[in-house]
Length: 342
Image (cartoon, rainbow, N blue to C red; front, side, top):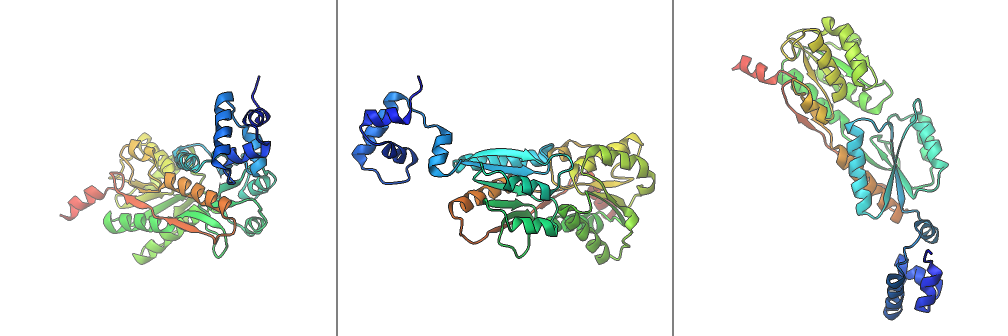
């Protein structure tokens, strides 16, 4: 037979509310009374019902993490960091992803209708006027990942995408000698793609290189679509001083694989670089030059902010910007270019 809070109260000769106060640690209880209750709990082997405890505290001690997808190392690293931080702060983490075809707006509508969670961290892949309007009406505590809502009082954790892309472009143009750079990004509405494309155009301009819209492609961050595109376009891309700047490692790996299938040597006939520094960057041959994004840290910091917001609903908004880091490997041709200049 299961032991209830009533049994604990009877054995300790106290009220149910006193047992509740001891369990939840929210109010002062006389030390001797606390000892009696704790002794009764140990003697009976009582385990508080998490749902009932949540009702008493008006908290579920559950926080949510909603991502555009949960496939691939990029998202799994965010989840890993978020889960570790949630446990550290006494919360359980529930992870969900957008359904196929769901945009950030419909996702937020769904979240607002669910009140079981104490708060949610959500990755916004695109920012539109109607998303910002909906954010203004969300009543549960939330933190935004990767979508920088400027001049708004929302907690957020973002990667300085443009800074990372500027570092990459200045490396391939300035250090590797690329005179033509092809950009392969995600959807045009994607906030990360927009920031990386802006950096791409800026560095071309800095170096007197012509921006050609025909050298810009918008895909879906997937290996297969990048592979198919490269099979179609490689002959037009090939050149000893040409480089493909892929907006993530997975697409970059697809492009390198297509080059191998068509007998195009990377990096001597075409340099290829990526973004994120997932494990695929080191597994690809040649290993990918890329930009390291602190994925696990982003998940952890988002959950930390969220738990702080739950505990202090009225504190000022906090905006955390994480810095990416250029990682130079073989696929950009940097080593070969240095030998030429010696």
